[in-house]
Image (cartoon, rainbow, N blue to C red; front, side, top):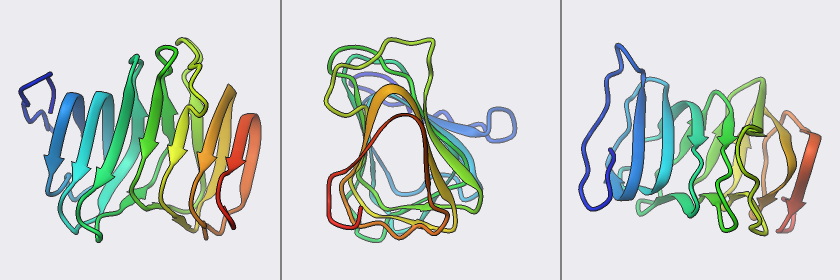
Length: 172
């Protein structure tokens, strides 16, 4: 899905294995059932279906504005089997994941693509809903801040190698 003002579905699992959401606001009843990559750039993706989005990775490409994943269906969740990559992009650049996330077993990094511009926003990445699952949350965000704004229950622990992790809620 991409474009400002119009949307084109661009899913070619056999070749690219991913979904691209570039510009505008897009509603999606379901992403591919098998693990795929999701790439966001200057867009809001709203999960409208109750099915879990199975993602092998989640990338927020460089953009000057806010990129967001939200949900209008309370059953919508993200099963994350890979990393969250934040690309920076400017003074107000921020990525918001406002959907519950379940971390697959193993280390799941929230990392900064260091070849891009830092954000001057208060937080570079915000998890607005609970994080659960067996995985470990690793923060590698250079000088950027990640906020957890809900009570979380992931079992793999937390490791911070660079950047700052802010517990912005009780039990975050």
